[in-house]
Length: 206
Image 1: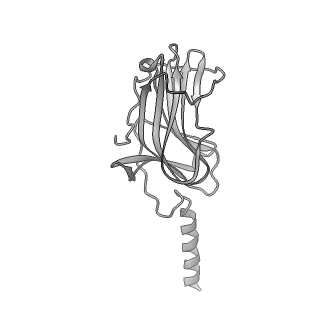
Image 2: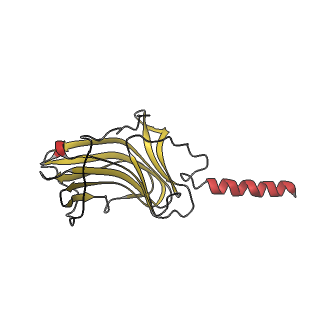
């Protein structure tokens, strides 16, 4: 009887852990530098950080994973920088995304803001990833008007499962490269003390 009880207890523990990254024994994540962590609706439902065991060209990956059976809201890593070096140009934010059992969506997102609010935005709403997939190259291209003040970019997972991000790049591209975002209504904005360039795009910094 005691053995049966211990066996049942073990099964319960394994089942509860299986939600972490969609697999038992998920890699421990280390703290991510230079990126902010944001959860909406379920602060304790997600884990965010750097996965040193999931690599592309020997570079670690950013990772967001649900750690409960029915996570609420979504989780995102993000960073903001000055629009100064990109004003009057198109900016491309790209990266490779891998997913495991994502039930809702996994996506890049980026917004450009000016003195009166957001001027351009894209969150891959019409092409977000879900389910399980190997590495897929994704990108966002936005126009950066001359009055722009800041650019914020991020990586987001909603629902159960795990998403990884690697091979991140941010660059100015020709205005012949089509934008992927849609017009947005103006909002509020503040942009004091922003860095000029994004940083730790390879997630190596410790």
